[in-house]
Length: 251
Ligand SMILES: NC(=O)c1ccc[n+]([C@@H]2O[C@H](COP(=O)([O-])OP(=O)(O)OC[C@H]3O[C@@H](n4cnc5c(N)ncnc54)[C@H](OP(=O)(O)O)[C@@H]3O)[C@@H](O)[C@H]2O)c1
Image 1: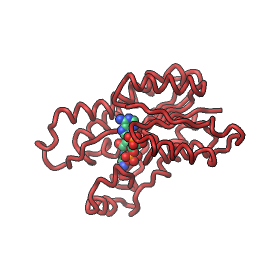
Image 2: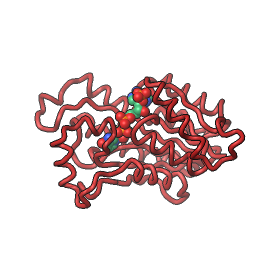
Image 3: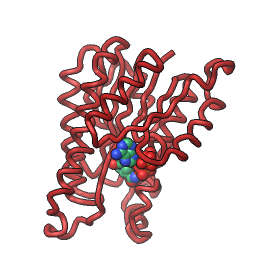
Image 4: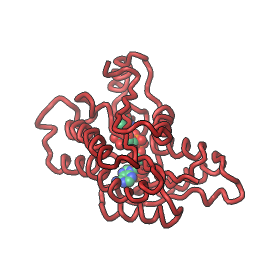
Protein backbone atom coordinates (compact mmCIF):
# COMPACT_ATOMS: atom_id res chain seq x y z
CA UNK A 1 0.00 0.00 0.00
CA UNK A 2 1.53 3.27 -1.15
CA UNK A 3 2.47 5.90 1.41
CA UNK A 4 2.22 9.65 0.82
CA UNK A 5 3.80 12.27 3.07
CA UNK A 6 2.11 15.66 2.83
CA UNK A 7 4.10 18.48 4.41
CA UNK A 8 2.35 21.58 5.70
CA UNK A 9 -0.58 19.23 5.36
CA UNK A 10 -3.07 20.14 8.07
CA UNK A 11 -4.71 23.14 6.35
CA UNK A 12 -5.32 24.71 2.95
CA UNK A 13 -3.77 22.97 -0.04
CA UNK A 14 -2.00 20.36 2.09
CA UNK A 15 -5.25 19.28 3.75
CA UNK A 16 -6.97 19.04 0.35
CA UNK A 17 -4.10 16.86 -0.89
CA UNK A 18 -4.32 14.68 2.23
CA UNK A 19 -8.01 14.06 1.47
CA UNK A 20 -7.39 13.34 -2.22
CA UNK A 21 -4.61 10.86 -1.46
CA UNK A 22 -6.74 9.16 1.20
CA UNK A 23 -9.63 8.85 -1.28
CA UNK A 24 -7.28 7.27 -3.80
CA UNK A 25 -6.06 4.41 -1.62
CA UNK A 26 -2.87 5.90 -0.20
CA UNK A 27 -1.79 5.73 3.39
CA UNK A 28 -1.16 9.34 4.40
CA UNK A 29 1.16 11.07 6.86
CA UNK A 30 0.14 14.66 7.53
CA UNK A 31 2.88 17.01 8.70
CA UNK A 32 2.07 20.19 10.62
CA UNK A 33 4.02 22.74 12.67
CA UNK A 34 2.04 24.02 15.62
CA UNK A 35 -1.72 23.57 15.50
CA UNK A 36 -2.09 20.03 16.87
CA UNK A 37 -5.86 20.26 17.28
CA UNK A 38 -6.35 21.13 13.60
CA UNK A 39 -4.04 18.32 12.50
CA UNK A 40 -5.89 15.79 14.66
CA UNK A 41 -9.25 16.97 13.34
CA UNK A 42 -8.09 16.29 9.79
CA UNK A 43 -6.72 12.93 10.89
CA UNK A 44 -10.22 11.91 12.02
CA UNK A 45 -11.63 12.85 8.61
CA UNK A 46 -9.35 10.57 6.60
CA UNK A 47 -10.35 6.95 7.44
CA UNK A 48 -13.96 7.33 6.20
CA UNK A 49 -12.63 8.69 2.89
CA UNK A 50 -10.27 5.78 2.41
CA UNK A 51 -10.75 2.88 0.00
CA UNK A 52 -8.36 0.74 2.07
CA UNK A 53 -9.79 -2.07 4.26
CA UNK A 54 -11.78 -0.54 7.11
CA UNK A 55 -10.87 -2.98 9.88
CA UNK A 56 -7.44 -1.42 10.36
CA UNK A 57 -8.39 1.98 8.90
CA UNK A 58 -6.91 4.12 11.64
CA UNK A 59 -3.46 2.67 11.05
CA UNK A 60 -3.35 4.03 7.54
CA UNK A 61 -3.07 7.64 8.69
CA UNK A 62 -0.90 9.63 11.06
CA UNK A 63 0.15 13.17 11.88
CA UNK A 64 3.74 14.22 12.60
CA UNK A 65 4.72 17.56 14.04
CA UNK A 66 7.88 18.96 12.43
CA UNK A 67 9.08 22.47 11.62
CA UNK A 68 10.11 22.64 7.96
CA UNK A 69 12.41 25.52 8.90
CA UNK A 70 14.63 23.02 10.74
CA UNK A 71 16.80 20.54 8.87
CA UNK A 72 16.90 18.27 11.93
CA UNK A 73 13.11 18.21 12.05
CA UNK A 74 12.94 17.39 8.33
CA UNK A 75 15.30 14.43 8.79
CA UNK A 76 13.27 13.23 11.76
CA UNK A 77 10.03 13.62 9.78
CA UNK A 78 11.27 11.26 7.06
CA UNK A 79 12.66 8.79 9.59
CA UNK A 80 9.44 8.69 11.61
CA UNK A 81 7.37 8.31 8.43
CA UNK A 82 9.34 5.28 7.26
CA UNK A 83 9.65 3.79 10.77
CA UNK A 84 5.90 4.01 11.09
CA UNK A 85 4.65 2.89 7.66
CA UNK A 86 7.67 1.01 6.30
CA UNK A 87 7.95 2.73 2.92
CA UNK A 88 7.56 6.05 1.14
CA UNK A 89 6.08 6.49 -2.34
CA UNK A 90 5.10 10.15 -2.60
CA UNK A 91 6.33 13.32 -0.94
CA UNK A 92 4.20 16.41 -1.46
CA UNK A 93 6.62 19.10 -0.31
CA UNK A 94 4.11 21.84 0.21
CA UNK A 95 5.61 24.14 2.85
CA UNK A 96 6.16 27.81 2.21
CA UNK A 97 6.63 31.11 3.98
CA UNK A 98 6.09 34.79 3.31
CA UNK A 99 5.81 38.11 5.10
CA UNK A 100 3.22 40.23 3.34
CA UNK A 101 5.01 43.29 2.00
CA UNK A 102 3.36 44.17 -1.28
CA UNK A 103 5.20 44.60 -4.57
CA UNK A 104 5.48 48.38 -4.79
CA UNK A 105 8.42 49.55 -2.69
CA UNK A 106 12.02 48.29 -2.81
CA UNK A 107 12.67 49.61 0.70
CA UNK A 108 9.71 47.62 2.03
CA UNK A 109 11.23 44.47 0.53
CA UNK A 110 14.77 44.64 1.86
CA UNK A 111 14.55 43.10 5.33
CA UNK A 112 17.41 40.66 5.38
CA UNK A 113 15.94 38.27 7.97
CA UNK A 114 12.83 37.93 5.79
CA UNK A 115 14.93 37.01 2.75
CA UNK A 116 16.80 34.42 4.82
CA UNK A 117 13.58 32.92 6.17
CA UNK A 118 11.96 32.89 2.71
CA UNK A 119 15.00 31.19 1.17
CA UNK A 120 15.15 28.67 4.00
CA UNK A 121 11.47 27.72 3.75
CA UNK A 122 10.77 28.14 0.04
CA UNK A 123 13.99 26.66 -1.33
CA UNK A 124 16.25 24.89 1.15
CA UNK A 125 13.52 23.00 3.04
CA UNK A 126 12.53 21.27 -0.23
CA UNK A 127 16.14 20.30 -0.92
CA UNK A 128 16.65 18.91 2.60
CA UNK A 129 13.39 16.97 2.34
CA UNK A 130 14.39 15.49 -1.01
CA UNK A 131 17.80 14.52 0.30
CA UNK A 132 16.30 12.78 3.33
CA UNK A 133 13.60 11.03 1.27
CA UNK A 134 15.72 10.01 -1.72
CA UNK A 135 16.78 6.51 -0.71
CA UNK A 136 13.20 5.61 0.23
CA UNK A 137 11.74 7.07 -2.99
CA UNK A 138 14.45 5.23 -4.96
CA UNK A 139 13.16 1.96 -3.52
CA UNK A 140 9.57 2.63 -4.57
CA UNK A 141 10.38 4.56 -7.78
CA UNK A 142 8.35 7.31 -6.21
CA UNK A 143 7.44 10.94 -6.80
CA UNK A 144 8.48 14.23 -5.20
CA UNK A 145 6.18 17.18 -5.85
CA UNK A 146 6.70 20.73 -4.58
CA UNK A 147 4.39 23.72 -4.29
CA UNK A 148 5.73 26.86 -5.91
CA UNK A 149 3.42 29.69 -7.02
CA UNK A 150 2.61 31.88 -10.00
CA UNK A 151 4.64 34.42 -8.01
CA UNK A 152 7.63 32.28 -9.01
CA UNK A 153 6.68 32.51 -12.68
CA UNK A 154 5.86 36.23 -12.94
CA UNK A 155 6.86 38.85 -10.38
CA UNK A 156 3.76 39.00 -8.18
CA UNK A 157 2.41 37.78 -4.84
CA UNK A 158 2.98 38.87 -1.29
CA UNK A 159 6.61 40.05 -1.37
CA UNK A 160 9.70 40.22 -3.54
CA UNK A 161 11.45 37.66 -1.34
CA UNK A 162 8.53 35.27 -1.79
CA UNK A 163 8.41 35.77 -5.55
CA UNK A 164 12.18 35.36 -6.02
CA UNK A 165 12.44 32.29 -3.78
CA UNK A 166 9.48 30.57 -5.42
CA UNK A 167 11.22 31.15 -8.77
CA UNK A 168 14.34 29.59 -7.27
CA UNK A 169 12.26 26.64 -6.12
CA UNK A 170 11.03 25.97 -9.66
CA UNK A 171 14.65 25.98 -10.83
CA UNK A 172 15.64 23.73 -7.91
CA UNK A 173 12.92 21.25 -8.90
CA UNK A 174 14.39 20.97 -12.42
CA UNK A 175 17.87 20.29 -11.03
CA UNK A 176 16.47 17.70 -8.64
CA UNK A 177 14.53 16.04 -11.47
CA UNK A 178 17.80 15.50 -13.32
CA UNK A 179 19.69 14.31 -10.23
CA UNK A 180 16.93 12.02 -8.94
CA UNK A 181 16.32 10.31 -12.30
CA UNK A 182 15.86 7.62 -13.45
CA UNK A 183 13.98 6.31 -10.42
CA UNK A 184 12.27 9.37 -8.93
CA UNK A 185 10.04 11.89 -10.70
CA UNK A 186 10.17 15.51 -9.49
CA UNK A 187 7.54 18.10 -10.44
CA UNK A 188 5.96 21.32 -9.18
CA UNK A 189 2.54 22.93 -9.01
CA UNK A 190 2.29 26.71 -9.22
CA UNK A 191 -1.15 27.86 -8.09
CA UNK A 192 -2.64 31.29 -8.42
CA UNK A 193 -4.43 32.81 -5.44
CA UNK A 194 -6.05 30.13 -3.27
CA UNK A 195 -8.65 31.22 -0.73
CA UNK A 196 -6.94 29.48 2.18
CA UNK A 197 -5.98 31.05 5.49
CA UNK A 198 -2.84 32.20 3.70
CA UNK A 199 -4.60 33.63 0.63
CA UNK A 200 -7.23 35.29 2.77
CA UNK A 201 -4.54 37.52 4.22
CA UNK A 202 -4.85 39.57 1.02
CA UNK A 203 -7.41 42.37 1.30
CA UNK A 204 -10.85 41.96 -0.29
CA UNK A 205 -9.81 44.56 -2.85
CA UNK A 206 -6.65 42.62 -3.75
CA UNK A 207 -8.57 39.36 -4.03
CA UNK A 208 -11.19 40.94 -6.29
CA UNK A 209 -8.45 42.53 -8.39
CA UNK A 210 -6.84 39.10 -8.79
CA UNK A 211 -10.14 37.50 -9.77
CA UNK A 212 -10.80 40.11 -12.43
CA UNK A 213 -7.37 39.45 -13.97
CA UNK A 214 -8.04 35.72 -14.33
CA UNK A 215 -9.30 34.89 -17.82
CA UNK A 216 -11.66 32.24 -16.40
CA UNK A 217 -13.05 34.66 -13.78
CA UNK A 218 -12.64 32.10 -11.05
CA UNK A 219 -10.43 31.47 -8.08
CA UNK A 220 -8.31 28.35 -8.29
CA UNK A 221 -9.51 25.72 -5.82
CA UNK A 222 -7.29 23.66 -3.55
CA UNK A 223 -9.17 20.57 -4.76
CA UNK A 224 -8.12 21.20 -8.38
CA UNK A 225 -4.49 21.66 -7.36
CA UNK A 226 -4.59 18.55 -5.16
CA UNK A 227 -5.88 16.50 -8.13
CA UNK A 228 -2.89 17.72 -10.16
CA UNK A 229 -0.56 16.63 -7.35
CA UNK A 230 -2.16 13.18 -7.50
CA UNK A 231 -1.69 13.12 -11.29
CA UNK A 232 2.01 13.86 -10.82
CA UNK A 233 2.21 11.10 -8.22
CA UNK A 234 0.70 8.58 -10.61
CA UNK A 235 2.23 9.60 -13.96
CA UNK A 236 5.35 7.57 -14.74
CA UNK A 237 6.23 9.73 -17.75
CA UNK A 238 6.46 13.25 -16.34
CA UNK A 239 9.42 14.86 -14.61
CA UNK A 240 10.90 18.35 -14.37
CA UNK A 241 7.55 20.01 -15.08
CA UNK A 242 5.99 23.06 -13.44
CA UNK A 243 2.21 23.15 -13.92
CA UNK A 244 0.72 26.63 -13.59
CA UNK A 245 -2.86 26.55 -12.26
CA UNK A 246 -4.05 30.13 -12.19
CA UNK A 247 -7.35 30.37 -14.11
CA UNK A 248 -5.37 32.21 -16.79
CA UNK A 249 -4.08 34.99 -14.50
CA UNK A 250 -0.66 35.25 -16.16
CA UNK A 251 -1.88 34.84 -19.75
N1 LIG B 1 -2.74 30.48 -0.64
C1 LIG B 1 -2.29 30.94 -1.80
O1 LIG B 1 -2.84 31.90 -2.38
C2 LIG B 1 -1.11 30.28 -2.45
C3 LIG B 1 -0.85 30.55 -3.79
C4 LIG B 1 0.24 29.95 -4.40
C5 LIG B 1 1.04 29.09 -3.67
N2 LIG B 1 0.77 28.85 -2.36
C6 LIG B 1 1.64 27.94 -1.65
O2 LIG B 1 0.87 26.84 -1.21
C7 LIG B 1 1.47 26.26 -0.05
C8 LIG B 1 0.40 26.03 1.01
O3 LIG B 1 -0.25 27.25 1.27
P1 LIG B 1 -1.72 27.30 1.88
O4 LIG B 1 -2.38 28.48 1.28
O5 LIG B 1 -2.37 25.98 1.77
O6 LIG B 1 -1.38 27.64 3.41
P2 LIG B 1 -2.30 27.56 4.74
O7 LIG B 1 -3.72 27.31 4.40
O8 LIG B 1 -1.96 28.79 5.51
O9 LIG B 1 -1.73 26.25 5.50
C9 LIG B 1 -0.50 26.28 6.07
C10 LIG B 1 -0.08 24.88 6.51
O10 LIG B 1 1.34 24.91 6.71
C11 LIG B 1 1.65 24.43 7.99
N3 LIG B 1 2.89 25.10 8.40
C12 LIG B 1 3.10 26.41 8.58
N4 LIG B 1 4.40 26.63 8.92
C13 LIG B 1 5.00 25.41 8.94
C14 LIG B 1 6.31 24.96 9.24
N5 LIG B 1 7.30 25.83 9.57
N6 LIG B 1 6.56 23.63 9.20
C15 LIG B 1 5.58 22.73 8.88
N7 LIG B 1 4.32 23.11 8.56
C16 LIG B 1 4.04 24.42 8.61
C17 LIG B 1 0.44 24.77 8.83
O11 LIG B 1 0.41 23.96 10.01
P3 LIG B 1 0.23 24.68 11.47
O12 LIG B 1 -1.07 25.37 11.43
O13 LIG B 1 0.32 23.57 12.45
O14 LIG B 1 1.37 25.65 11.58
C18 LIG B 1 -0.67 24.42 7.82
O15 LIG B 1 -0.86 23.03 7.77
C19 LIG B 1 2.61 27.20 0.35
O16 LIG B 1 3.83 26.69 -0.15
C20 LIG B 1 2.28 28.49 -0.40
O17 LIG B 1 3.44 29.24 -0.71
C21 LIG B 1 -0.30 29.42 -1.73
